[in-house]
Structures are given as structure tokens and as C-alpha cells.
Length: 424
Image (cartoon, rainbow, N blue to C red; front, side, top):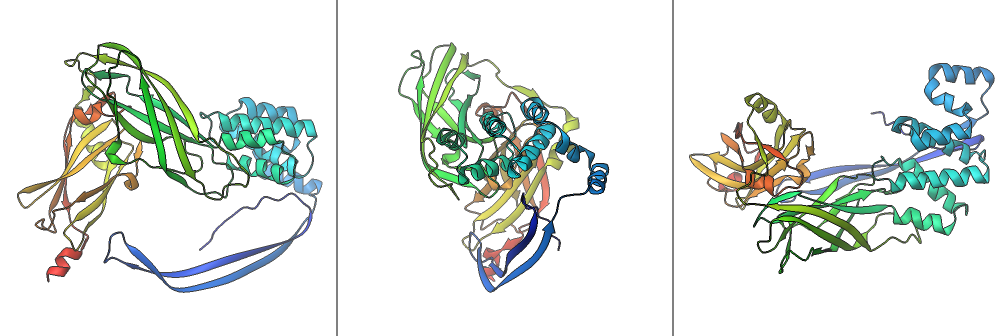
């Protein structure tokens, strides 16, 4: 097995690389839920090698330029050109400019003014939630901090911008319906070493315009109130539903604030981050209950594409008779909003709801299903039914339409049946 990794460094001369490789032999048990793993054997090996880094000769520079002109050209561009690439170029050129500036900064080839301006550019990219975050930027900022070259104000700014939140609400709801809205996490998690971060100790407080009467009630989608997101995703959403008495028709507003206690992994020392965010104000319109606020799509040509985008996995039945399974939805051609049920042996079991926006990815980690009373379910010949419902679509912020047809996927079998084994 080949595992290719890259290490950034900036000094000439003799270098040595030591890699500690941990080998674990793991045994996985299927007798419990969730599945448990135990390590039966472990070994630690140290791999070492050395090399000498020297300045490239003119011939080497020519060969490098011929083999990779896009990358090598950056070595010969003036700093002002690289600054322009970072400030206004497409992401590909922006990242090439950033990597080249990092290389020059590591070699000490940037003046103090040039380095300060480059740091400002990195912080501007981090602040702009529309731009992808290059974690090499976080490595550079933290290396500057370690070398006492980064002022305290910039370090605080870097910490403050590692997380951001904003709110988006359904723009139009029917009179008497709840208002769905999303709290969107914008992560600029810093360097290339950190992993996931999460929090479950957080609250959202809402205030509405004066024409929305009290009492207000706020529910989490499916009862979950957890943030768990990678370093640099900007599309993780925690869904809420705001319920309030029937209100007058017309334009209204909602404002929200978020407070949390975040659990960091590998958080840089002395980095201060906010514990409260103003999510801003969002407008929404209440229309008559008879108004059709969501369009229906019924093109028969989409059925095959929708069937192909649905992937069912890990259909398991446990000793207590519970059935669990997962569903992935890969880039559907239209917005989807389904009730999910399992039909087998002339009986139907309700499983839950699933939804996906057009061209989105719904990972199975966020679409798990649990049927508690599946003892009488046959082990083979299961049919998973997906029944479209506009009521589900109206509970979602992004859905402006939905496919109103139904889908049935047959030939599904229980893969691991601990309940059936226990009855034998």
C-alpha cells in the first residue's frame, strides 16, 4: 500500500525524517449496538530516512519549469502580482499565490511590510465565508505566532474568525404554519492538523417583529441540538422550527442570537474565541393558508434518476427486534421530501422522513432509521417505500419545489439478523 504525504519545510542542508507507524489489529463485534471494536494486537515501528536539500541549478530550474510551468512560474513572479492573484484571482490561482508567498515567507524572502500585507490577505480570506479556506494559511499564521511575528490583534482576529454562524429562514409560510429556519455553521478551522469540533451545550434565542404574538416556541429538528462539523465546511446546518400563534398576513422579521460552549480539538494555546454570536435578522412573509407555497414536479423522466440516487445500506436487526438501516442520497435531480416505510409480509412499518435538495449530498451519517417493533418482519423481500409529501417540503428552508411521485425499492434483505439467530 502506498501512502503519499507532503511535508513543508524551508531550510537547506541535511534533513532527517522519522515516522512512527502504529499498527493495530482490530476485531469487530456485531453482537451489540452500536458495534464495538477491540484491539487484539498492536505494534509500533519507527521508519527513518535522510536527504540533503541544495539550491537548484539553472538546469534543474529549467527542467522544473518544463515539467510544471503553472507551479514554477510563481517562483519568478513579483510579490505585487502574487498579491493580485490572492486578492482577485480564481481559487486555483489564489491558492498558487498563497503557497508561493508561504514558501517565500518560510525562506525569509519577504520584507516585513510584504509579510504583514500577506497576513492581512489571509485573514481577509478567512473572514469571507464565500471563499474556500486553505488550511495551509492556518499553518502559516500559527508559525508566525510561534516565531513572535504576529501581533496580538491579528492572533485574536484569527481565533475569532475560526467559527461563524448565520441564519436563513423559509421566505414564505402559510398562515398558521411554523417557521423553519437553519443556523448555518461557517468553519474556518485553522491549520492542517486539527480534526472535528463539536458542541452540545448551546442555545438559540429568537425575537420576532411586534406583529407576531407570543408565546413563541422553538423546536430542534428531530430533537437534535448538536454541532459537529469539519475544519472548513460552510454548509453544515442545524434546523429549527419556530412555532407561534396564528399571525397577520404580510412581511415579518425574526432575529436570533446563539450562545455556546465549544469543545475544541487541538486548540492553539491562548486562543480566545467568542461565546455568543448575533445571527442577524431575516424577513419572511405569511400568506393565506390556501396559497400553494411550493411547486410540484411530476416529470416521469426523473424517476430513474431518483431511484439511482438512493442508496440503502447496513440493514440490521438486533437481538431486541429493532431494525436499523441507513440511506444515502447522491445529488438528486430535483428537491425530494419523503416519508420512509418498510413493507414486507403484507404489513407496513413506518420508519421516518428524509429530504434532500437538488444536487445535494445526504450522507448516511445524517440519515439513519430505527424501527423498534420489527420482530415479525420477514428477513427477505423487503420493499422500502418513499412517499412524497408537500407537508415535509414546507418544513424545509431551501425547498421551493418537490417531486410529488413515490418510489419503491424492492429486493432488500436484512444483512445481519441477530434477532433471528437468537430464536434458533
